Length: 401
Image (cartoon, rainbow, N blue to C red; front, side, top):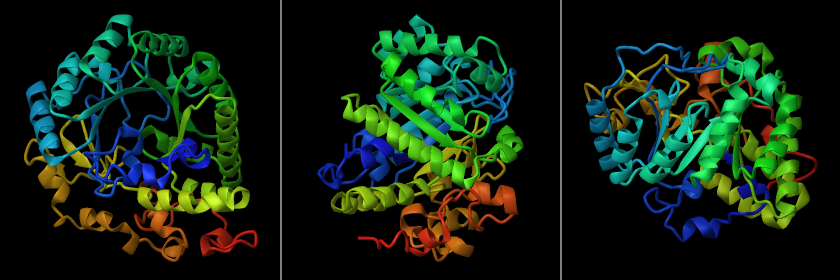
């Protein structure tokens, strides 16, 4: 997760992080990515059931409930363990988490134990009443997924009317005083919609947006050929930075992030280095605090069936099941070779990743994409769009400060 607004528009400085002590239990949510202890943010896929049919769904959700879902009581035991373990945030996801009738009960249980509760939703089921309930329970944030304006979004979502229903869900959150933002997964089929998403942010006064790079998992594996080329990725990341800067200059400080491609960090830094060499040192320091990809360390996933994964895209490999062992035990058990290596993945990446100038602030990017394309977990991430010169630390006649 790369905070474009934080880093490029200078809304966060290293001193902002340091005064909290850099630990997950003390940092406010907008600074968690810079924590030193990297207690995992846990994505909990509450259910595999969904009322939409998204063509890029990593969870391959469908409109049917699976008998293997954790029960309410099993979920509470999980939350108890996460609280004791010091997990700062639980992201309630799916499928569509609002299809779980016990979502309010589970959210309330987490908040009461000092865990920040975040919801990832398609937004179509957030009625005014549900929004008020979630606000009252203490939900910190609701991220609503859109893939463009109405025609493109409804094509991706597989249900006509999904766009308008999601907008209604956003309005209901806003009227309830619940912080709400957008999630947008970029690919060739919708990348031209990025300017329209920025327009929508401004028109609806939405304070946050996350632009996700495509990860080849679940039904997203079928879209590999529709992923952006390296030049297309560079162009859209530049566009995102340009539009973010424009908003901030006009007094509209929207929080903008890119997710799931940590090459964005060095790329942003190099742009700052060209434009404001003095501030580049602070940007580099924050990227070093961020540490790049944290699958298996700073982010983890619990599936609807209780299985524990390195992140929400790695459902093909499980480290254990919370029905049999607590998450905290599974997460710290390095007898599993993959878990052990993920804790220090920079030692195991190969190819140009191994000798990359930016390895300490990227950590080898996404292992799932490398495995999906090459069959080798430790091969270079094919979505890394840095040039060979940039990887070597030589770029446009400049050297890192």
